[in-house]
Length: 381
Image (spheres, rainbow, N blue to C red):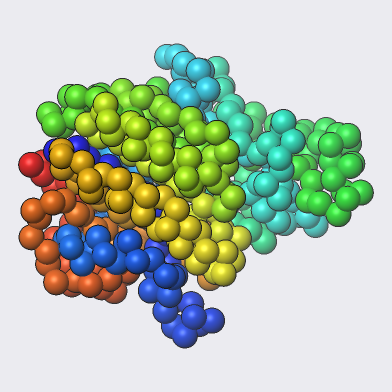
């Protein structure tokens, strides 16, 4: 048996009034997801433990089979691994966005998805930094005053770190407001990238290779356009596969990811395919675009993978799920349980006929949490 997880980041949602009270998953045309749910088994999964922020880093580590209560050390250090930065003892790593602030309010977390070589996702490493900080992910707070959300220390020892970071934020605003890229963007009516925003502090994580956690997995691969997911794969001992044209947005190369996954399954036991597009549409509050990303995921990635591997002599187990909801009405992540489906040749179906938040509540796997999902999936024979 080989295994593939296909994850649509933020794909779960709340009912959308413009869709007659249906969720995105209920409204979208997704024949392959529904067929796999009908032929397989489903359930609801809690990916974010109590007390944890519902970030993609926490949720994806959980889906990959890691107990985040023991191994999570923040988003920045995971992204650092993907770009070849080794966080050493005595250092603290942080994700550092370049964001757009307008009239003192956080307008968006990505400076309008700035696409120059600057981009918006960055890494900050602080020598001797302390992680006992309250930091707000910028995608959680569009429209809120940035000054109310600046970094706060939770211990006296961390106060110098908080002071340093807040000073950097304010100094960056003065420097970036005069930057030629931003002057040009403003002249063109685009959002300027006019402030840094550090968040998700942590130290070097302690993660076992996935092959040590799950005996059925000897070789594994991860496919994503997102540094965070690649970084998790790095610490998990997985081969990181880059796909030309994979963007992390609605225009990503679905077909290229599908082919890369098919090729990887020919040599590897386990492949993890991550698609960021639904999450970004959710952050934008664009339910029409999010609906399209779900349909594209179904027809342009899940469909080709299923059609190919269903002809193979060696059986392939397929799981489809989001990591967390990113409701369009909320424009940020929630920690609500998410629907999942597992299909494998010979697996007894549970009678669920569609893949969505309501249907999967009736699934044969019931309500599970944490690493239970991965243990179930990777133990299929």
